[in-house]
Image 1 (cartoon, rainbow, N blue to C red):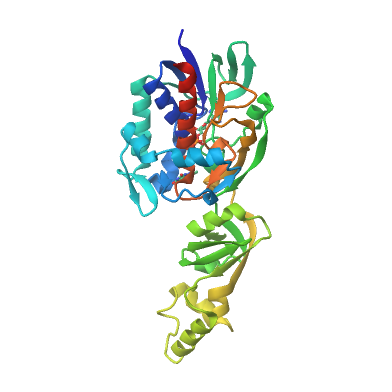
Image 2: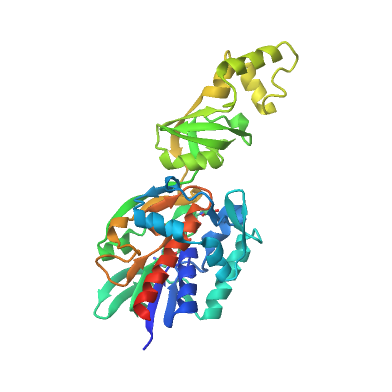
Length: 370
Ligand SMILES: Cc1cc2nc3c(=O)[nH]c(=O)nc-3n(C[C@H](O)[C@H](O)[C@H](O)COP(=O)(O)OP(=O)(O)OC[C@H]3O[C@@H](n4cnc5c(N)ncnc54)[C@H](O)[C@@H]3O)c2cc1C
């Protein structure tokens, strides 16, 4: 009789794994998905364009226990070739990898077409509530039915973005008694004091420092505080009460910027060519405009909530696993994707990891099933 794999979660990690298993192995695969449709979160990625990976996969871009074997899984995965193998052609734009279509919707369609073509069974509106070891594999208790499987993969992602449910997955973890790090939102906007409401919509490039971490890039002022890619990246290190230091003119020293402003002040509209028009009234009221432009300090009041986050820190601890994401205490039980306590920066790192970890589980299963 054919062996059976149940994958808990129809996100990109679970669906990719299901495609590989059915394409290359003689195995039955069922995906149980809590949402009414699989791959909902994927649609929101990369502002609808789906940023799949990044040329710079340095481990500094990942939070969590990046053991050498985890780093190898991330680096050894040739994402361009792997996606080509299932018919998805990609291109780098700068460091960022996108599908040629630049459409997350197209990627969703392609993944679901492949899954159907290879015979993956996807059951939606079926939330898994607990997993137990049984005599010949695993017993899965779900909202509408119970299931039995030889192999199980937990690919249930995190509540970030409010697109994969809002439950923190503790019930599922507790049914197995495994170790996990509590989850908290990351890659998200920051609510700050002060919040420069009048600057809402103004984007400024610069260097931003929080708790010793500096990020170059863009900051977007909002009515609650700050957003923008540089801020989303730094949110990984942010806690309420922390201060974020903004240098909007890192290419100039204080003295140089002071001289430029001093020269311009001899003309009418001294700030016009230098800053966004919305900044002019603020600078006109400052005794020391250079201090605002190079040393602005904002205090983090809060991180914006789970529904605004692109990922969650925390999840299933890496110490639970052997070197292919199989639980040490549970043979043939695996985990992949964002539910693992590995979280990437903004810039394609999380989808890369979701796919690379799925590939690693496929390789491991293929060794036992031939
Ligand atoms: C707005 C937004 C933009 C993003 N942009 C990018 C980007 O451009 N590039 C990038 O790399 N990353 C991006 N990310 C992060 C990336 O989308 C995730 O890291 C990635 O989708 C994780 O894939 P996954 O399959 O592990 O989990 P998910 O995509 O979260 O999928 C998990 C699935 O499991 C289901 N599930 C959960 N619990 C259960 C249960 N108990 N039973 C059954 N099913 C369950 C969920 O409904 C969900 O469908 C973004 C995230 C958001 C929210």
